[in-house]
Length: 118
Image (cartoon, rainbow, N blue to C red; front, side, top):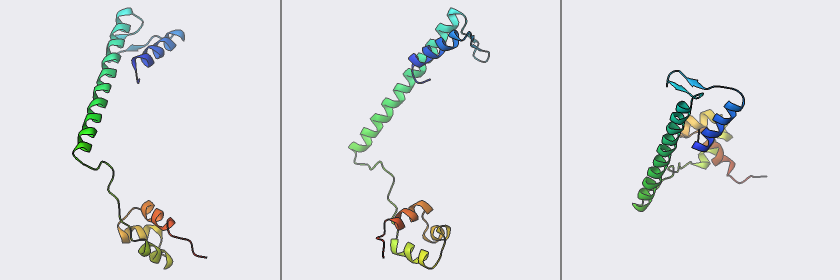
C-alpha cells in the first residue's frame, strides 16, 4: 500500500465484501477493533519510513549536485563509421556488438543516426 488512505480504503472494500482479513504470521485479526488499530499503526509507520527514505535520497542528490558530481549514466562513445563498415560487410548486430564492445541497442542507435544515402 502506498499511503494510509489506500490502506483504509482497501480494508473498507474487504469489509464491504464480507471478507475478514486475518494474518496468522503477524497475529493480526482485522475483524476486531484492536486488530484494525494495530494494522493502521503499522501502515502509518510504513508510510512514515517511506517518506524518510525519500527525504534522505533527495538530500543525497542535492548534496551530490552541490559537489559538482554528474548523476547520469556515462556516455558511451561509438565509432559510427566502424559500425557502418561492419554492417556493410554483412556482420550481424551481435557480431558488431562483440567487435565494438557496446550493447546491440547502442550500436543500432548510433547506426540509425547516420544520414541516409540515396
